Image (cartoon, rainbow, N blue to C red; front, side, top):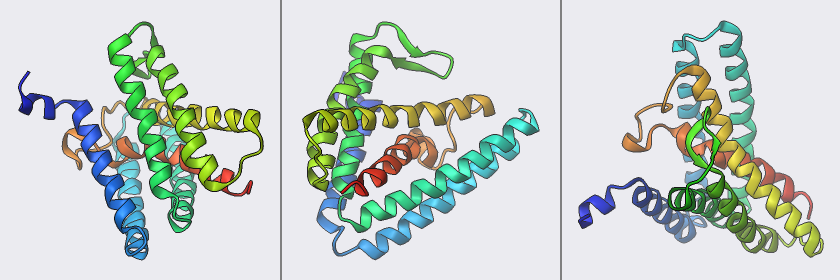
Length: 220
């Protein structure tokens, strides 16, 4: 496999998009906070548009479409509020790096170790081995980058429990959006991001973990 082929793999795309985004946030979040909040709400509009178009065009029952649309709107609303709070509190890069570690380690380990599928009917490419690795590395990242940074340590036992919950919720957010896409019979939420799919395909786990982090911030 040559360098071009390596750079075009899904893993490489995940890594350089995430790293470049984290570097940008780390270097410029102080100076561009207001602009980034505006960008967050622009993203929210795009996410709402994807949700509306996909539920409207789906051939599933009207009841299922309405349930997904209503739940998606609440998920989008509270996820956006949580992300704005994290952004304004200057913890955004620590938070996103923790989510990136969970997504990446679960993806890498799942593809290397393989084994039994996690939820083949919902997300056929995910393995239990990947979920376990994402849980372990994600919990460590959450403890160091989120709990310690937020100064909400309540003792090692409680910190470990909260970190594990963070890692679980992050992966459940991914599965939740995947499940909704299966009901709507779509692979990607859109083609706006090319081979990365749509905005919901990138924000699936971020919103879930952001809402939980928003909760942790009020434990201080």
